[in-house]
Length: 202
Ligand code: URA
Image (cartoon, rainbow, N blue to C red; front, side, top):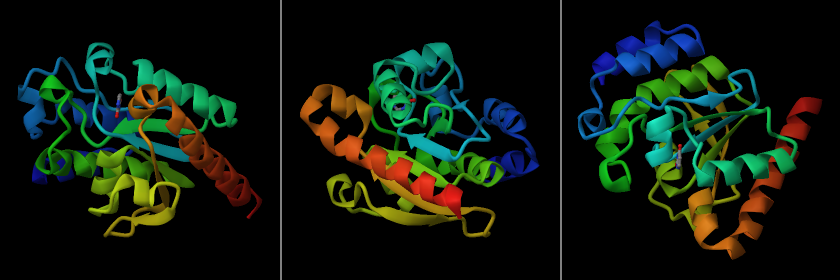
C-alpha cells in the first residue's frame, strides 16, 4: 500500500494517475493472468465518478473499463438520463481477476489509493457505486446491496481531500441476467440525474 500511496500522490493529473496505475506492481491480480491494466474511461471533468467491480474479459483485452455488454447497457442508461458525457468510469481493482471471480478485500485495498486519488483529482458531484463489490468496499459496509441501493451516503476521504454523496445501484451484468430488475436500477439513475440537477442550481 505504501508504493500505491507514493505513486498515486505523485500524480497531479488523471493522465499521470493512469500512468502510475500501469507502473504499479503491488496488486496481486497483476501476476494472475491479466493482460494489462484497466484504469478508467470517460470524462475526468464530468460530475459523476462511477465505480464498478473489476475488469472482465473484454476490458482486459481492450484496456478500458465497461466496454463489454454490461458496459454498453450502462452507457445506454446514462445516455437516456442525459448523463452520457458526465461519467468517469473505473473499478475497485485495475486488473481482471482470474476466472472472473470477485476481487478480494486485499486486492481492493492494494488498489484503493489510486481510486481515492482519482476521487480527489476529479472532485465529482456524485459517486455511483455499481454492484455490491464497489458498494461494500467504498462505503465500508457489510449491508446488502438491495438494502442500500438508491440511498445517498457520504464518501469522504480520511485526509479530507474529497467528499461527495455516493449511491449504490445494481450491476448491469445482473440486469442483463434479470431484466425485470432494470426498473429498480432505472429509478436509481433518475435519482442520480435529479441530484445533479439540484447540485447545478446551488
Ligand atoms: N464489470 C465491472 O464491474 N467493471 C467493468 O469494467 C466491466 C464489467
